[in-house]
Image (cartoon, rainbow over all chains, first blue to last red; front, side, top):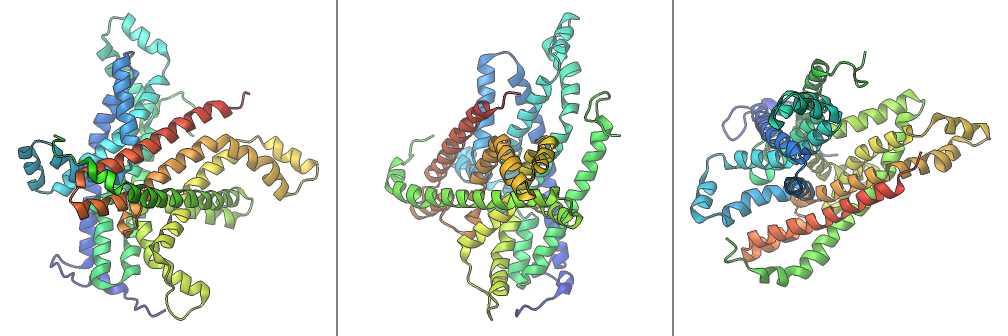
Length: 244
Length: 230
């Protein structure tokens, strides 16, 4: 194999003048983390909202909730990314479309919004399952003591339902983290994209991809540890799911 | 909003999009699902075997692949496959694998990690007594697994296996980064050739949606039909 290994390449200056190649990868890692966190906030807020709407006994709202979930779950993420980035600016009124196209950091904004909606459909399904797993007596008791429906959700169903679904939510969070890499197709300079750039500048394929692989594994380990800590902290006492 | 929406471009390129693009996507999906399910079952058997080394190897494989983004793995194998080919065939220079085969290898190896977890859950859902009963009437490991445990595991897990295949169907769109002519790739080529981005991406999204939605409804019915009454 005629391949020139050069593991010191990480400390060579990159041609973009932003420090070493390692700096380039770490900046990519920061964008990956930023995209994952911001899109998760969007996904969580939208997902809880849609999930709650799907548990209300209203046929029209339930249908709208189903449509929302089916649309975002049955179109590939990459296609959704292209719809947000290329198609939406063309079909909205011209003025708004122009503003969208000229927006600074448009790749980051589009990627976070797209991932937020994409993941929110999955969060919504989990939230719905969490709420429906609770005894219907909870809702009845809440209403019987004079709480409004809003209060029943805020004080009873959501606090308990969300605590039950923490394990599946953390796995959705990790999926969302990995999905940020799809942002590279619309020009988001996240970790995978920066790795490709490093490989194109240096031809050191293996060094570049090894570094990215290790960074992703490390990121995963950190978030898995974090999520296990959260799971233990919020576990509902008395349910089988608790270890120890 | 859709005032200058040109349906004609869809009609003109329909054959290309469906018989080249969609056919490519479906072929990649089916081959990867078959390969991934077979390799995944082997990984699950390794992981559940009494052999610690095999079990650790399988667990490591599954956990590493499940922590990496598919796109990164696609790029990895795009560059790695020619060198692996060279190593296997002992040829003096890297073997021309081509984007299609490197994508197929990637999807089989990547999906195997996910199928392995599904099959592991399937195998573990069968009662231990069946394994004991199998050995008691004189069956070998191969026969117990092949004739008793795996058929039931596949049956129990069929809806989950098919759901994973629908996810795989959607994930194959990522071969866009290798410029392969899958459904999204062909749509993107027409979009750039005819400056019809809006029509092409909406059409591609619609086809993906219709197939995924119909397939997931079918899986939903299958789940009800094959549920074993206990």
